[in-house]
Length: 138
Image 1 (cartoon, rainbow, N blue to C red):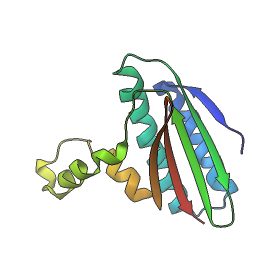
Image 2 (image 1 turned 90 degrees about the horizontal axis):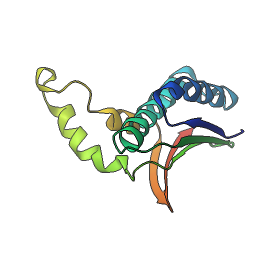
Image 3 (image 1 turned 60 degrees about the vertical axis):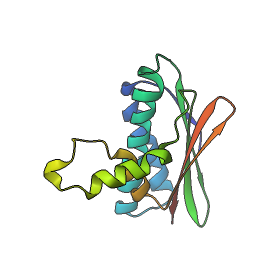
């Protein structure tokens, strides 16, 4: 699939969601897997926009690219925001999930949801770019 490049703003979330839906359809993912992938990508893209760009006082773009083969749909999100490895938040969010619901803060578990929603979520910093890789088995 072609790469999608959008501004690193909240207004881009709709275009990102549409790209993910299209990739899931081309990969012939079932409805649950497609929904989960969209949820995972939305959580990470929102974090990139809010924390990597807005809170860091930066501007930039978000690039999405999907590769589809017989085994999986692999979707890459790259940005030039502040370095952020979402996997480092996992242990904190796992502890929040264990709390009784009335003690949990609103939100704050998006990375946990993203990781649980796909078969694999990887992060790497490549030069000045963050790369999040989502893998969904077909």
